[in-house]
Image (tube, rainbow, N blue to C red; front, top):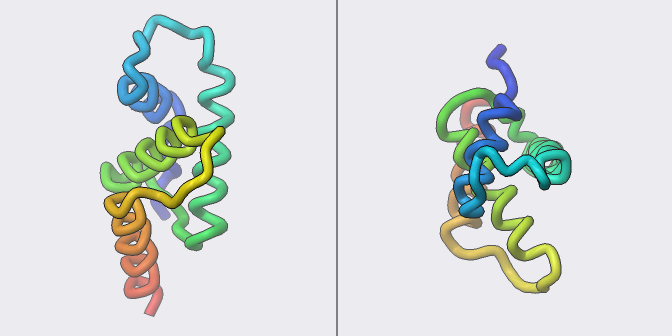
Length: 97
């Protein structure tokens, strides 16, 4: 069984996507909670069982950043994110058969 995505790597990637310096630790605790919440949501919502693959790490980071940037707004996910979530779900379903 593959390992879960590394939280420290995910944190650095989220900070990069948010244009925050890696040395700025003022939001680290909050961002780590967001990353963990996004991972739990993806695993629950899609039975994704995210692993440490590059594709899953990028999905986790993109989903976390999208949630963070849209936390006070209503609206649908962008098409590119919906498509990636759908593809990840289908990959899991095909692999399970």
